[in-house]
Length: 132
Image (cartoon, rainbow, N blue to C red; front, side):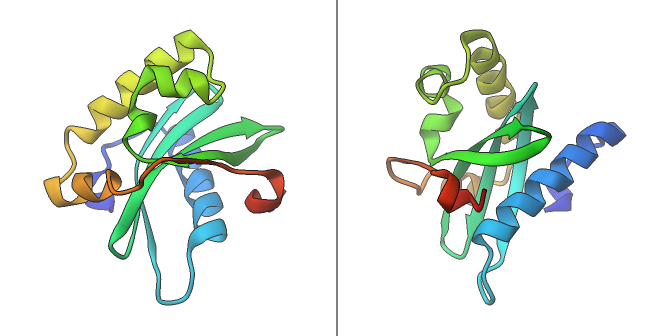
């Protein structure tokens, strides 16, 4: 999805690659390519849009001990400050992250954005599910 990625500083590109690698290693399967975009990062939290086949959603990741870990998989809720707070993100970070996610998603193609909204509910990921 490089066509929807804006120019970014080298540090952000490094974090984006690390996040993409984590998600692909956990969820991509042969014949089921995982597309990852957009990636919105505030401090040690990131909300990432993903699409795989006809499914899609968002993932909340947290950087713990220099490694990104998936905390929650959900749909539109991860665009909302209140849901980010419920997932454990502090209020100021949740506000900044929700703002960043919503801003990043304004440039997405409508069909892709619609797929991000197909994930129903939310799933809290355990360490066993994240491979840690």
